[in-house]
Figure (tube, rainbow, N blue to C red):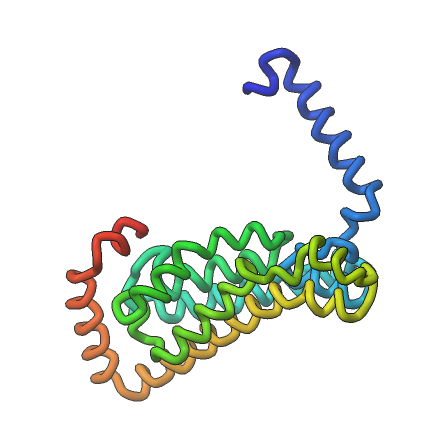
Length: 224
């Protein structure tokens, strides 16, 4: 509305269209040249130096959305719900970042689940061992601290934009997110299978987690 205050809606839409055309005409905006992409189709474009077609993009995107959705649906009645602060929240954000066009700065969406799993993991992620929580926390923190994947670093070392070393460095953020998602899905799947084999353990775990939820620190509960 603010943009349309001095012009019509049609002019605003036309302006957006021209902006998109300019982006398509800019070589630096091509998927194979965008060093900040963290989604799987963008990473594939970087490796093969060409953007995947529609069918290939869908083949990459759909499993990243369907598999986490199925695991979360399967665990819906067995895992305590802690909103965005728990494992389910992190799985949802990771699958979204990896499946759909996203850049490294979009990883800010991981802040709340990262804080929950890292600092309140024994409460909001009791199904994960301390070691697993540490590995996932480290992997999901890489995009925030990966100074190597910046143009400043590339220019200082004079790395070729299409060189293997620069491509590998720029893939690091997305690969770490993908590894974290695989670990969480594997853990959730195995936990669910163990609960089916030992229902009494599932009941005990759920009771302990429910009791622990009453003692969630104010900072963690407010994040939910």
